[in-house]
Length: 344
Image 1 (cartoon, helix red, strand yellow):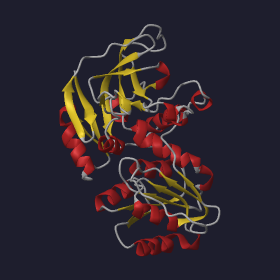
Image 2 (cartoon, one colour):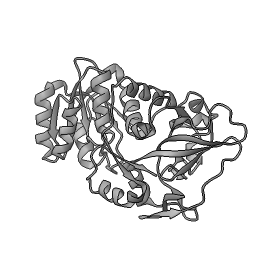
Image 3 (cartoon, rainbow, N blue to C red):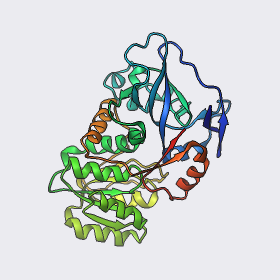
Image 4 (spheres, rainbow, N blue to C red):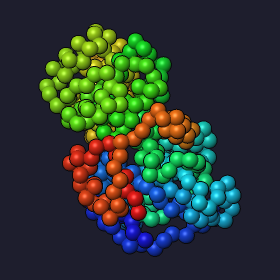
């Protein structure tokens, strides 16, 4: 079968590999769709540890049960499923609470999930090590929902952490209207009632934000002081109750520090490599800085219910697996709107 494999730093290839066979307790998934994520670019730029084998990329995956390993009885052949992305030990307290994204043993394993240290879903088939990592799709189709396993779950988790501060009287600033950011705008609009300010460096991304309910849009590729002034004219002196940064580079960190309000939540989701010059009194009193990671299995079930109710809908374009290298190049250049989805 064909698979998109990471061999070394900046070395990805479309290889022909053997179709896997599930062992006891494992499940073989016939992939219907795999989302293309910015996190993949970070993996590609870092490469794999010395001596580690190449692995298949793709951590936003959905498809159908193709084969059940010995002892798996809670799914049926042909059943449509989504793969929960973060793979923990399954036994520690966070994992028992469905929060494998915060598994206590995460630092002890080089594998964070399928496509993140071990074979993922940018292939015709994928092995999932346990049925606990699968969520039934029922009437939903894999291509419709595969990217939601990260692009919607991650912002949903980040927003939910600040739900007590997202009120009809508050402002939420969403920085970066890409795959995750445009989902955040929808979740904030349909589930919460705050006023949404969307910031990005591209007009088409800001148009996407307005399409999904942003109340204000702001170009952020200008002098930081002028951007802060524009946002303050919207919010008044209280500034933003919540800032959600889906970029995480130096300019956006600077912007977040200057727009979060007293007792506000400043949440950095993006992996842009920025560094924060923190010192006493350079943030408002009571403001907190959080770097959440992904989301829980239960939260992913809630995300799928948002989709079923028509409250969220991801902007995506489908491409054949054979175009993966071209799509990663476009993603790196900022030429992908919403999410790209690969199909075998």
